[in-house]
Image (cartoon, rainbow, N blue to C red; front, top):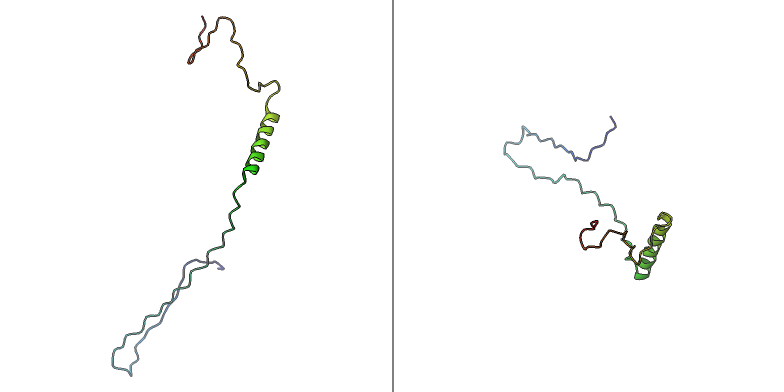
Length: 95
């Protein structure tokens, strides 16, 4: 039906002739098919240089700045707390 298989198949017909009385063993024949060659792997790309890594990080940071909402803080000094709040290492609680 036009199908393909990855399983090897072979057969061998063995018979005894009537005119030969002595029993003889037949030599074993290796009928296995050779394994298909593995596809060649493409070479690995070279490791990036430090300059290339710096350029990549700069590009990612630039894209993050462009995507940030307008008026987003750029870092630096923390904002002042509203009156009645105190700064703690773990919890900010109202007074």
